[in-house]
Amino acid sequence: MEAQQMSVNLDLITVSSTNNIFRAKKDFSPAALKELTLSISQDDVIQPILLTPDLEKPGHYKLIAGERRFHASKLAGKTEIPANIKQVVTDEKAFELQIIENLQREKVHPYNEARGYKILMDNNPEITSAEIASRVGRSEAYIIQRLKLNDLVPEGRKDFLANHMLLGHALLLARLTPQNQRDAIEEIKDSQDGYGTVNELENYINRSITNLLSNAPFDKDDAQLLPKAGACSLCPKRSGASPLLFSDIAESDRCMDRSCFMKKSNTFIIQRTREIIESEPQIVLLKNYADPLPEVQKLLDEHKVKPLKEYDDFSSHDKQGKKVKGFWISGREQGKLQTIHVRSSSKNESVNSDQQNLKQMVTKIQDRTKRGKELDGEKVYAKIIEALKSHPTQKKECKKKLLAQEETLLWYIILDKAGYHGKAELNKLLGLTKSSPEKTYKVLSSLKPEHKALLLRKVMLDQYCGIYPTSDHGFIIRKIAEAYSDIDIKGFEAEQAVIRAKRESRAKEKIQALVQELKPTKKKKS
Image (cartoon, rainbow, N blue to C red; front, side):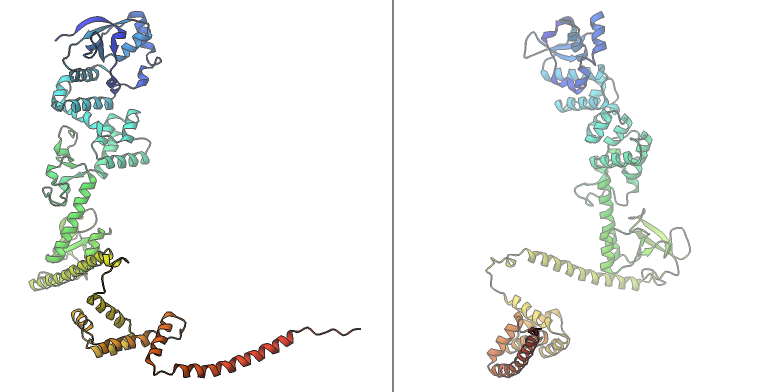
């Protein structure tokens, strides 16, 4: 339906709260409207504003477009304003019309324009970017790129609205994850005054934040490498997923989420290193001056594997020496396989003259399998210890009686407390000179009473025979000796009492002599 043109009383017009999407309040101050107010005072309003009937107030209207002209007319003392009246069926349609008209007619900041498009799509989920493009006379790529500006982080949005960055800067940043945006803003502003040129920001992002998927060390179709992220080929956070948004990127596919890319790369490197160590001895591990990931270094230490070091053991460019396949675990090439030539002077056990010998490969696999089982046992034991730390038996409220297995540990602690010679004597007595953990447990869990007594008594004298009668263990040992009844403790004390009496008598005589010397002498009268 064509719009109807007529003059409308200013008091019958309501300004919608959504008009502030496109302009700030300061744009409607008397100072900002001074020139327009003067023009309207002299020549009236030349271009009609756009209104739609207010469905809730018959005879009233809602302002669709032309808010500056509306406020300036009031400031100029006008009572009416020329308007085009467009009939709409619902408030939703009126709102949609308002956004589109404002986006077409007003000089809107790109970020506010982006907000308008987003609100339009939020209020009408069925509308597409292609439909919006058709209505406002823009390309779909233009609309998609504007919509992306809504993803600017607050600090970026603030600088953009304050015109501290260009539209090109804003578009480059908005395509990144929030954390990557903040990193880029901090880095680029710290290194120069402001944001620099758009090309400088783009070069920094390509160099330090985004990654070419064609250079990924891992399989881009592997959905299990990082299950929460899924396969890269299906991920929306890559340039190839939205060609219209990334029309400026020449490469076929770039990952825009550095954190996810690094997690996948690191996970792959750790997994692949483990596979090579455990079952692929024909592949050597390579490193440069940089340290490998802590998890990779732990694998090397656990399996006692020494990687080849660039320049010391091999060169990527030197073709002399034994040719082998290597896997990089550090540096720019980490995660990648490369054929190298090992220098003859290399002493690394991973590569020698018999590297291709199948028997040696089998031996290496067997050794690493054995070491793997040992590590499995260590990891299970570590989990057991962690479980015990939070077990109810560690709480004072636990009423569980001492288990037979726990008593076995008690006897082990006593045996382990013995000194070198004492322990050797006890091991011989108990038949533990050549023992395994299983045998030690079996013997200690079935000790005869006489063996328990001897074990405790031997360790008592081996470890607690120092002269500390006032200590806890000294008091207990005396009580044990008293309980034996055949040790003449009273005789020991009587003998020592005689010695003490003589000692104290001599001390008393010495003290008396010293006191006598300290008495002042009387002065003779002159």
